[in-house]
Amino acid sequence: MNIHYRLYDVFAETPFAGTQIAVVTADATLDEPLKMQIASEFGYAETVFYDPTRGDKPFSVYNEQGKTTFGAHTTLAAAQRAFELGLGQPAQGYATYTLRDGDQSVDTYQDSNSADDRLTLYARHFDFTTDRFVPELSRIAEALNIDVKHLAYSRYKPRLVSVDSPVLVVPVTRPEHILGARLNTGLWSTLLAEIYAHAMLLVAPGSMDGGADFHGRLITPKQEAAACPPIGSVIPEFIAYLCCQENTASGTHIASIERGGHNSRRSLIQVEFDFRGGNQAKCRVGGKVILMAEGRFT
Image (cartoon, rainbow, N blue to C red; front, side, top):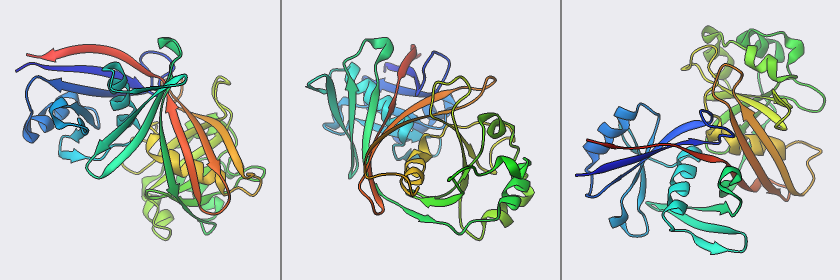
């Protein structure tokens, strides 16, 4: 059996950035235990598998525990491979591909720019809820080990936002204060238990080098204190947070958000969303997907 793989950097402006996702293809059907072993061998959070014998649902995603659902990063990696294989449908200035898995489907797109400047995107329509009842700024600052004066600014205040799961979105004055935050895990349960949030998303205006509108960092008790994990999973909550601001007008809005610092992998995520009031939004989320390596299992 020949098992080939391609390794992509997703949401990456340059090589060795973004989030690493492998897409695996074999010339025979792989059983589930083998897929789990391969996913474990790569050591990434999730691995995409392509099986052309599965009709209009050739892509699936696994981790070392078994089959799981597509997220932002695995969706873009699968879409990139689909477009490379010619599975997309041409349109004016771009191509489209509908990624299907089980009873879920996601529309993906890729523009016709040169390979070095090509964007791959997915579209989503979601409902969201928000809540102003959040812990006091002083308690949040204590839990993050930063000065309270660096939290909240202008019109932006912390909000509990939920699309896929509850996330406490905390505005911070500058990207460097986000990168300097260090979670006190001993205060986590008492801080967030009353609002049932599973994570915090710190958001600051601007970026480290001026290349994005916002800088973001996901904080959970499971990560190392200085870690800057991928934020693709909470982009819907970030969009919902922007929608719930009083000055966000009805219409289409464009923004970009980066994650990571000078000593960690950096990602750049492009966002376009349609907001017509209420608790619903439509969005297109994308970035560059860079092919970093090709190989095979022997």
